[in-house]
Length: 432
Ligand code: GLC
Image 1 (cartoon, helix red, strand yellow):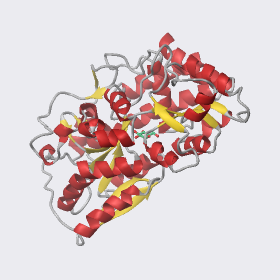
Image 2 (cartoon, protein in one colour; image 1 turned 120 degrees about the vertical axis):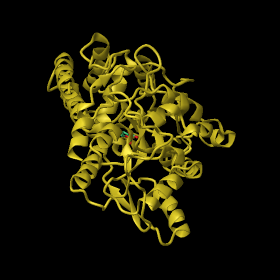
Image 3 (tube, rainbow, N blue to C red; image 1 turned 90 degrees about the horizontal axis):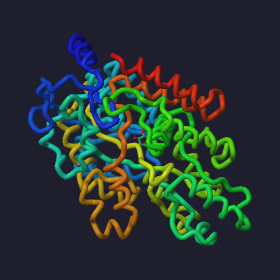
């Protein structure tokens, strides 16, 4: 096992891809359509666990209850981890490093596939068991490592610009902003309305955690820059990337983004928006259903993210189901993964909790589009989203991004210095 792990890790040289780092060293014969993982036999039936970040909407337990009613001898217990992605990753790694069987099916953030697969913390899966051909292609790609399938998409994610339709309308603005400068100009108009004195223009997720990696990458990409270049190498110390970072730094300095936003994760921003403190907010689709139940119902909607000279681009988010290598009852686990990632479950996740489905046809379904008019925009956002670096050493790469972006946002470093330091840190963490 040790030998295999070492070889897999050595095979993590960057590969040419459109602006992203792929970890690969040729095909090892692994395929997502035929063979199950190595010698893994998916045996054993009985109780299992499903491990994921805190369920803010309550819909996960509802779907698990459905399974449990149908499978009283193979019950699934929902283990909820903290809301932030970094803590979830740490706890899952801890479970794997101790080879514990406490976690069976893992809800893996799309950016962790390479790391978990290369360390053999998760099993390679028999692709033919899942309807992958019905899913959006970039979403399925996030579940692969070295040509093999290591997870099954359960939900996708693309960034959206939430905004106050009531206030924009009152200020005479008829369409949402496509650029950052239009957004700040719109805010200036809204702020002339009575009762908006305490409001800030914009926020995203700027606390030092995975959400900051996302928001930084989106700002860089939306200004025409890249975190990694077309040959897969870090290329973040550029004038375009600087323009993206400068937008965030400048907006924090002049109050367009409120100072406290450097403490915001997704849920903090949602609370701020729902309590009327923000005109615009970058967040994921999950917030839509929750905000509809708040006092802002009917007063907001979403638009594609704005950018420097035109529409911006989103980072590709989402969660895939993976099977812990150290789990028991793997036959039950595979069946549960199929159930939980099915079109039926995805519809429940969308209807009840506005989670982005992995299935292509959901985005064109008239009744769903009626319920969530932004679905066609979201589909485009996901299809054109930029993946974060796909590296085995993802933990190192994301913590370098978080550290340097945070230093620039809080004024501890100039933007220029932060990008220079980030470039060399990324070169180190990907040069293996
Ligand atoms: C969402 C996304 C995930 C991302 C995280 C960052 O959960 O689905 O991909 O890493 O937010 O906070």
